Image 1 (cartoon, chains in turn cyan, red):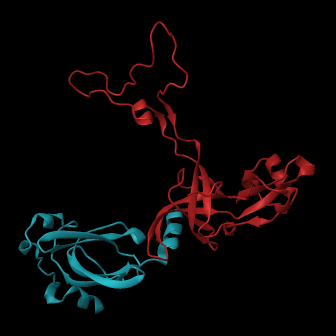
Image 2 (cartoon, rainbow over the protein chains, first blue to last red; image 1 turned 90 degrees about the horizontal axis):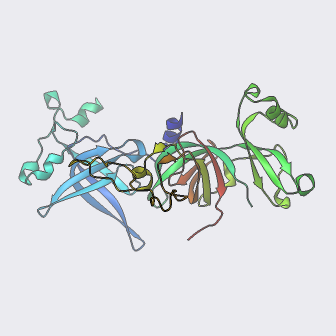
Length: 128
Length: 211
């Protein structure tokens, strides 16, 4: 009863354009930034190494290596400040949390792409 | 002097405001409350209204409780609460107060009964230091000395000792109302409030709107 009410309250704020995200996905996140009254969009690209929470509180951690320095940003996936989240590639991973990527060199962090049986990738397979 | 309403804590979640800022909020299901009694200077020497909350089947109440309500053709409610008002602000018996007494952006004080923690030692209750856990020490979580010896021969009043914690009436002041949902009788208040989910709450306009 009470959890139901909480879900109802937050329902309308959920991100309707949220793609189906998986750990290991390479994503491009477009973030709205308000600067001196002006709004612009900044893109951030990386690998989803962690997702936590559910409903409105769900967040994902996106890691990338920028100029040799590891960068991790945590995005609340339902935030209205995110203009879009695009899945570029789906990595083949065997863990729910990819913390091990932190200890690896840039070259070693490239994940193999996941394909379904018969070589159809996840998106096209879903359409059928 | 202002009117508040009664409600129940539903639980906590997060919501975004129009600027895209994420706020931690507590969801409160409040009202609708009915005015069950009106007191004025002539009848009682002061002016106030009494409101009732949480409608139940009539047989859940005792006869005196029920009689108080049925004499004015009111429905059976479990909780009654009085609010002092100026005589000009008084309502009529049977009037309904719902969440719309508050608006988004208002400051409110929320009163509830905190979660009981039971009998708690001094380490957890007053942040006393702990003794060494090893090297032969037998003084692990003991309170230490509680006062002077033969000279004083008593323990000073108010000495911090182990005892019951929680299950007390607690008011959290100056919380801002993030959202009011009239359809579901919900108020979303920024921050946490005392008590367990389902606990009775009194929501009132803030006594002192602060800083």
